[in-house]
Amino acid sequence: MIPPDEDADFVAAMEAVLEVYQRPEDARFAVVAMDERPVQLLKDIRSPVPPKPGRIARIDYEYKRIGVVSAFLFTNPLQGWRRVSVRQRRTAIDWAEEVKYLLEKVYPDVERVTLVCDNLNTHKLTSLYKAFPAEEALGLSSRLELVYTPKHGSWLNIAEIELSVFSRQGLNRRIPDLETLRSEAEAWQKHRNPNAGRVDWRFTTQDARIKLKRLYPNTQC
Picture 1 (cartoon, rainbow, N blue to C red):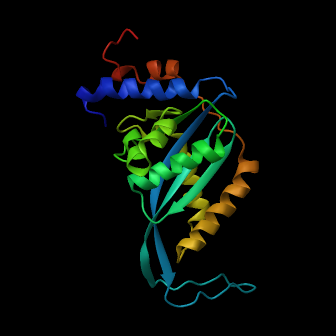
Picture 2 (cartoon, helix red, strand yellow):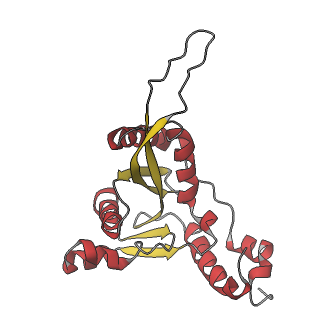
Picture 3 (tube, one colour):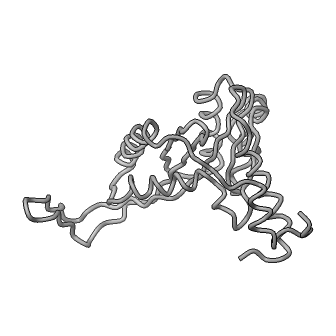
């Protein structure tokens, strides 16, 4: 539910995101969406009983909490590419280092990367200045365009869809440590990238102006 006084903010942010998704593919530019989520590490107290003919595997209900880490997911919906990075934390420094990897390792030759993300306090250009010297931070920020999904509008982030798929397919069991989780993430993206294809995003600005007309302050949209 969106409060009435936030309608205009929601509409403006939504249309900015939809405009990005409708841009034609261009080798000089890249469109990437990112999202992140905490992952709780859990260790079995008793060893699971493996399956046998006629009997399913059995897992004891008791487990030990090891800690919480963070999974960062980046995806290019036009290219059908995904990358999951698992880190101990989700600080401004962690986000900045992920962005640097994206710009310098994944897209070193493009003029600009447009990054769609939510408005978390770490998802700011200032995070680059916290992580790197000013000259390096300026060089990175000059190649980065941040486009934020609106409050109450996380469904507009394609990365959230991919992160949900990763959660169902890669996190559907107890994972006891960071290295195992990183191995799961690596295996998942290696399988999904060549097999899942591109995202067929069909919700356009014109669709929004019809289906969500009630949110527009000027109803003659």
